[in-house]
Length: 347
Image (tube, rainbow, N blue to C red; front, side, top):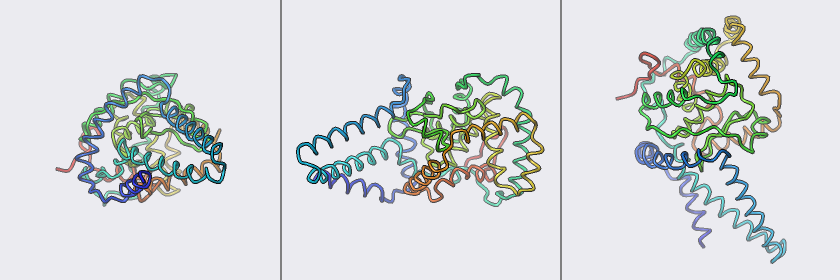
């Protein structure tokens, strides 16, 4: 009876039509921030990914209980209890997911909180912004490589930049997480995944083979999720702004990311012109990033993994699925900025 009630509760929570304004006011900027200020500092104390411990522990317990059921009742009779337990645990996990992070998928999107002009989003504006990105990576290349830590570790400038970006966007301040390696690292590399946010213990997990020029933006993107920005396009936008407020290495990482996104939004002719305008250094970095991704990439694993993630995003009311990553271009082009790339908010 309790199992059935838990499943019904999970289904109701998934389908409940909660207004975005209520989620924003009561959960994303209050309850979630309070929870994040407790969980992330605790996970920061531990050098390993607690997410790995949680998943491995849950799997081990599930297998142990299944073995006990089979020994006591046999395969046929045990199948029912194993199925009920799996369904119950899944429902409970989903409810915990919603409470610790998942409700952020239902908050007000950044395009509705900032001054956003849809008419400013065009192929021509993408080409103009791409030229800005080319200029910035060419200018920042030397100082970025001189200042970037050889180990790829995140510097304090990125945390300071993230705090400034949060204030500019009107977001509550959060505790940033120490980037950690995970047991999922082999999957990350084979699927072409740069990182993820642990939605239960609110940790930042990143691929171990990220290049120093990639790491600042990837970490800032994941910190955006820690700040309750669930939509991938919005998280890209916040991560980009955070890096622009950091060191030269952080800024270079942001513009290199944005250049790649913008290059996909212009015509083939414009793309060729952009590539020719890149200096040798940035061009070499872009080539190195692609070589890193392709080194371990498995097309089969990547396709399957991104298909599953696309379904996951759509199930959490992100209609565009994995295509939401590219929505950062729409925000960069459509949001109105003041000086120093400060986005103007709606009043």
